[in-house]
Length: 315
Image (cartoon, rainbow, N blue to C red; front, top):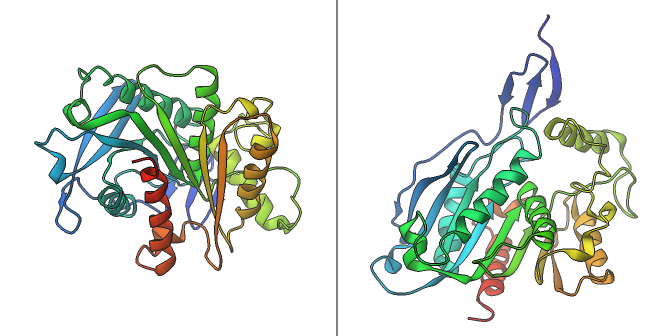
């Protein structure tokens, strides 16, 4: 069989018909460390061996050796379910800064990626990670940082892009099978990766942009029914009003192709029978995941402050 490109997802990845994957974006990695700039310590741990699920943990160094219990942030990275990792310098540096600012313990989840492990693998792994966090509720879990320093009555979930999609889908699962041992105080969905077959008002109708989004989703989830799959289009999910989270922050960017989906999600939640509180924030003039690509810009600083205040509101 002649090798051909099955999905050309440039500039992110190319997937070949023989199963080979050429990732072009988000391939750099950095080891865990003590970050001198923020004073945040990190380490890598295995959550499960079969399937392989792992995470990078972050904790303010000042908390180690103290009796202080800190809120917990479970973070899911983006990358269309296909590229990027929890080990990338982009996420490592961002989590260092976020943990230092918010004074939390973070669990940055490394889930299996498509196409080698197509969806729902990433969702299953993300749920496995939540169950692992919950296993520390009596102070006798497998990870000492969580046993000693985690306030599991104040857990937050966050993610960007595909990671925000994961946060939503974890909420659907939570609504059906709440985990004992942890209380989720709120979730943050930054530039959520949602789509649909039909354009929303004001959303692009350009066929090349729409078909590229459809191709990305098809590559990650080959058995999908399309972009109106409830996993990708929450408006098509009859369980939306049963979302398990009580407090949701949706962040969108003014120039982002996905902006209208984020606002639509926020409005749909507000108008459903869901009994939680949802807030929406837009950063004008910025594009998708600008805060990760340019973390030093003023708008990234403002978004960081918003996320931190969301986690510290009831402190």
